Amino acid sequence: MVVRVVRAWFVQDYKNKKLSFSMELVLMDRKGDRIGASIRRTLIYKSKEQLQEGMVFTISSFDVASNSGSYRPSRNEYKLNFTINTKVKLSKTVLVPTNVYSFTSAYDVFNESYDNNFLVDVIGVMTGVGVEREYERDGVKTKMNVIELDSNG
Image 1 (tube, rainbow, N blue to C red):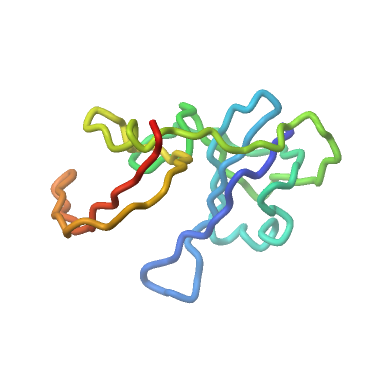
Image 2 (tube, rainbow, N blue to C red):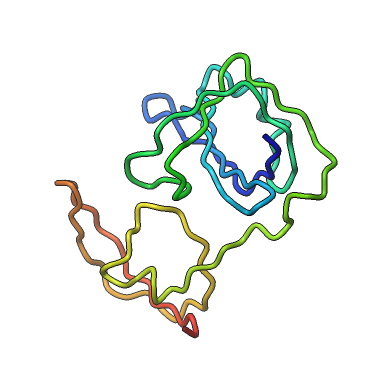
């Protein structure tokens, strides 16, 4: 599989702040389709220096799993899990697009009917921060400030 790394980040271990729980990736193929990928803590050392955002790689020997739960990195029904046998090799191909953005308007994102379980690219101008509000989802209460955006559409 030949992919460009769109985003890469580390998920912190809540019990030990000095360790990463996993490395998470958003990958894009030559058609512009995205898929999430995860590298568990014990395998991060194999690829963390190599897998840089914007670079193109050939990736082979990985597991495929169902993409479920909240805050998924893509709308793809599957995700990739790196294993001890996963191979990552830098590719010089120019077939994978360099434009990694797929913008969603702020109007759509903040619409009550929008499914916000997925990461999206938003562009706009922040015009202010509103008052703090409390939200509840799946029995978990969260307080956050409302951000006001002028997204021109």
